[in-house]
Length: 360
Image (cartoon, rainbow, N blue to C red; front, side, top):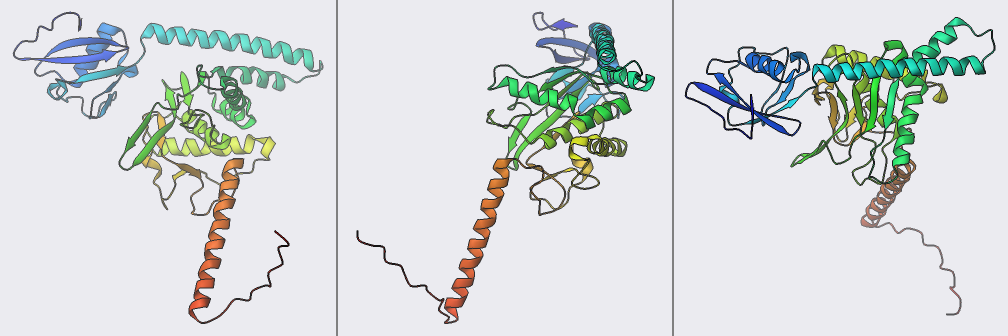
């Protein structure tokens, strides 16, 4: 394997593959009969990144990862393209796992000491065990983006998600530990086409190593609805277990949503339906399996529920006022149409006598 600083010695009968990983570009030479499985094996040998941790982005092509749909896929179609490699090496994964265990032990000890100081000596073993589980099955770190307006508000929102009773109950039940919960840059993972703008609302990296959530609006100065962000977090937690958006994933995702709603005693477990899901505004029906984000959740304008008419539950104050203004406008337009129909039929509306305005 050579980086771009050296000349590639490609010869007839060989395929040269260009690979970019963490701002470093490499070239690899393979025989003409080499397959995609050979490529992944070579990356593991050269960069110490296990095949299971590798994901390769092909420009205008599929995402390559193990297990392969076609292990014998030739490499000829990948020439003259710069492939992007995503993945962490064995040492990095071990370092993160070591940090997770260390922080979990410290949090468990701190929580146990705090619980012992605040509770009487008759505290049951079950309560102590739950405190230890809460310290272990949680987000070990929360971090807001710096350099944007009001980072303290983003940090408070992330901490609110971490301490949300429903989220804590779901993570404890499924034994989820996430090393880092952080904020997504509002302008990243956004794509605009002639069909509209699509935005990834969340990302899960390496099955729970890092979860990113889109907290802000595109203008950087506003924040999305809390329940919308929380449902995105439920979606990303389901990716700790299942990568593809198959039936097993959606069953777990909806299960976590119900558990979070039921465990949120602050709202008495009230939900907007037995199974809430995101639906693109303006579409009557939406297939669950159409969400494709390769670990995140792609979408445009999303609203809760599946019907045309939506109540004001879960809306911000600005959205409620806008909804009320649209309703008034609709009623005024209806009254004008009725008046025009009456005028065409020869009817004359009653007019009240005008009051004197007084001297000018």
